Amino acid sequence: MVLVGKGPWLDDDEQKAWRSYLLMHKTLETHMERHLQREYGLSKSDFEILVNLSESETGRMRAFELGRATQWEKSRMSHHLTRMEKRGLIQKVACDSRYPEIAITAEGMAAIEACAPAHAARIREFFVDVFGPDRLAVLGEVSDEIVDTIRKHEGNDCPPEVSGNC
Image (tube, rainbow, N blue to C red; front, top):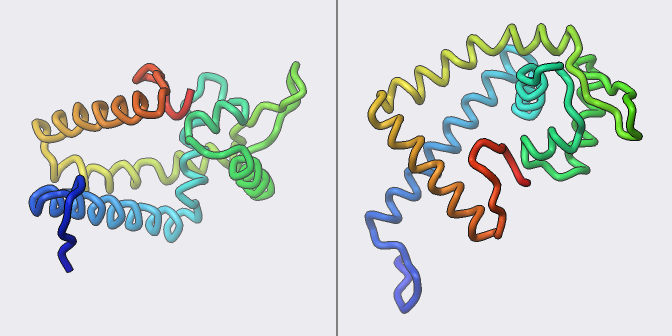
């Protein structure tokens, strides 16, 4: 069915490109999630938290910092961290404020070290190598422009190097 009328409709080429992007994103994300879960017993959410903690200088972050980095709501973060703590991947560590720091455990570090090479290899195979260096550079530039446009629209002028919401 074709919608007809006035309005900001996408033309055929724009619609095809948008839908191709949506299909590629969903297919790639689903494939990567299934691989992490099947081979390493980690969800995409587990992986995202473990990556952020493992890349911090101290292996620790405050929950609000993780929320900013992942763009998760506070309740989602709290529930997920509780599940990860029960599995021994992270621990909540008391510090000088009323909010604990979230620390990656040895088990969490072992999990990320075990899965990261295979995860990176799949990203390379299904994404990096398909794009090639020239198109990958253009994709990076365009992706940054889209994020900047959304932030301006939302009135959120975060610097590009800051992940998540400011």
